[in-house]
Amino acid sequence: MKKNNQKKVILEAAIRIISDNGLAAVTHRKIAKAASVTLSRTTYYFSTKQQIVDDAASVILSGYITLLDNFAVSLKQKNRKLKTVEEFCDRLISNAAGQHRQKALAWCEIMLDYARKSEGSDIARHWFSELSHCWRRVANALSVNIDDIDLQILIDTTLGMQFVVLALGLTADDVIKISVSDDPTERFNQILSKRNEIDDGVSKFGNKGLSSINNIINATITVITEQGPSYVTYKNVAQYASMSLSAPAYYFNSISELLRVAERRIFFEAKDRYRRAIGSTPSPLQTIDNLADLSAAVFIREATEFRLPSIAHYQIWLEAARSEPLRPEIAEAVVDQIRAWRRRFEMLGPCSNRHALLAQSHFVGRLVRVMACGARIGDLTDFRKEFLRGFQIRWGAK
Image (tube, rainbow, N blue to C red; front, side, top):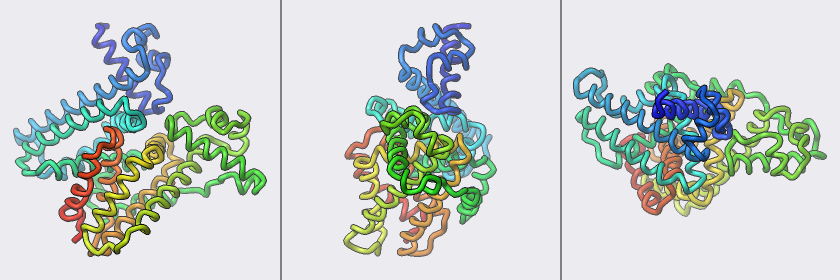
């Protein structure tokens, strides 16, 4: 096998591992086995795990650019039945839920990893810059006149929707149905209805074990925040909690159960932050400008002061893409956020759940992008402008 081909095979194996098992599973030995090459081959091409991750991101980007450029050419030649950029967005989201799911999930994992550490911000900025150029070429091929702000709104909204559909395990058919429905929460509620009551340990052990249980949950959240949910093991949690190795397994029957409890706590802490931010607003939401001001304030706090908890929250979403028992908890979070956005919009006028979902998806997508690229002042100040544009044009607020 030629060197370039062998390196490509190794990176494709790494992408599969990241998608299927998370970044914690990325080791030279596992990649060598998945790629059917010797261990010495992986260490020859890559000296560190981070180098593997960075090059895997480049492979995904290269494939994505090629795909979109070919798509743009096909549009120019009238070989595609597509008329609007919005239809293009729906197509991408559908592909992320279907044929491109593996690479989409791996890419989301890598972006959130870059959000955690500054070393990846340059790569992430390059990624999103190339993404914008590709989307611009597609828009030009469609003969659509769209400015940079509106194009960025569409990109971020598509990214946020991608997180939703992956986390909830939606299919390409689900995405198509949601894209034409005024109430996508019908599908989300079907997932939510499968939620079983979470045993947080208290019912089993009573208040006597409450201190230990809280210690374990807090340690789990710390592992998720600092490393990611794929690093949550009984051993790691026990070390962070300064407890015996058997303690987490004694109180929680499975890692999935522990992640569900941790996700619920992270979710409610986020809700509490949003409520406090809204409660501190000096004036009621009487205009779109008021809503844009509030949205920008919440966003800036999530992207800076609460960056790590935000990363942890969305990393559990990605873990849910691989673990069905986690999905009802994510569905509850998504539905709750849709309702919150709709309540805000309805203070200004009629609003559908679909508009609220698009607003929430834009928030998520932009948050992930800004955190991955490094929260710079320019990005934060532009957010109000972008959200105001979304309210005025895309999400039905008046």
